Amino acid sequence: MTRIPYTLNFHTGKAIWRIRDLHAQYGPFVRLAPDIVSVSHPDAHTQLQGHRTKGKPENPKDEHVIFQMKGNIIGANREDHSRFRRAMSHGFSAQAREIIALEQQPMIKRYVDLLLQRMREHCHQGRSPLDVTQWYNWATFDIVGDLASGEPFDCLEEAHYHPGKVSTLLRFEYIGRLLPMLFIPRGLVKKMQEHTELSAIKVEKRLGLQTERADLIGKMVSGSRKQGIEMSKQELVDNAALLIIAGSETTAVLLSGATYLLAKHRHVLERLQVEVCSSFSCEDEIDLVSTQKLKYLQAVLDESLRYYPPAVGALPRVIAPGGDHIVDRHVPGGTVLEVWQWVLFHNTTYFHKPDEFRPEPWLGDEEFKNDALAGVTPFSVDPRNCIGKNLAYAEMRLILARIVWNFDFSLAPGMEDWYERCEAYTAWKKPALGISFIPRAAEKMEVSKEE
Image (tube, rainbow, N blue to C red; front, side):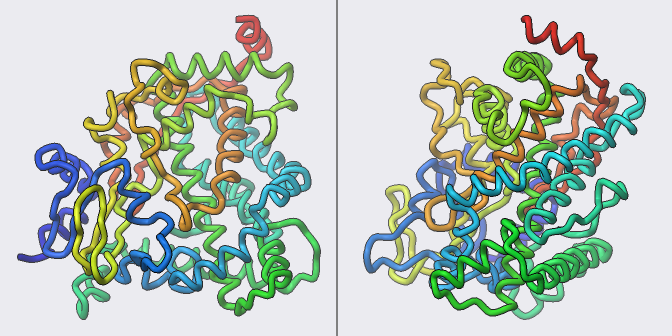
């Protein structure tokens, strides 16, 4: 009868557990509100958001969710999205990735070196736990800031995070725009505004530079010119600022989750240590390219993305007029259809042991042969898939491999239930994650190598 229960449940931060239970009871389709239906099925993402047959309209994103993002590639309509993506793809093509890997690898390495240096300075041989949610945010924000705008945000230098980072309430039409102020701390609203403003300033400054620097903004500008794509200055600013925000926060979230899961599952961490330390003769060999060969590391990251996906919440689409056929069911036009990534990835119908952290399914283990791994799409699918996916993977592999090479680590006391204390909205609201890091001695690395 009303959206009120749905909205109140969402703002508890625990909606994903409740919605998972509803799907376990009622199956792949569950009505959460008069016009909102949740679907939990491995084919849902592709059928709802994938490439459309000729003449078939796109199921657009929910206006109430993306109204503030219409100027960038996430919130753009079908035509603008295609225009933005063609311009931005110039910076994410295979050739561009190779150029960035070669030309920008020293810069990325410098920030990873600084991250490890600062962690060594502050860990005190494991006696002072570090809040890795902060350290990963600082590192990824510095990297993507420099990669995109040509200069860092100096987060690691200052041990300070420049601010940044809400929307079922907006479904309540007229009063919806006012209600968030009642639920969201004023400090968080202010930080969101400051982060956006700071990113815009950095982008404006970079756009004013006449340089051929192989960074993401430069590639986007040159790509739009070469293809004759018209992009206003504001569109360039909006999309470049998005690259900075999305490229830093999501990577940091995944690294935090992966570190927690490794620390809690010692046998997985030890196997990863053996792989990393036996694959390289010295730390300098660990780079953006060489880490691609680490199969167990890739499996750890893929399993972390399934277990703790950065985009934890729903990905709502509005079914186009005339309706659509989704997972063998006709869904009427105008219905808001949601696919909650975490709910799907933890569905016992499609995954053998979804609440266990197990990299083995990604390595072809026979026990998990029926797991619907193709349905694990944390970077979205088809025309709207994440354009920075490959760059994100490369950055995550490098940072995690270097962390594993340099440190033994474990959960600090009281951190065992960190995952359960996280709150899930559109993204995760993470409490501090204390990890005790002990620098690994060179001789210990040699033992691991021999093993």
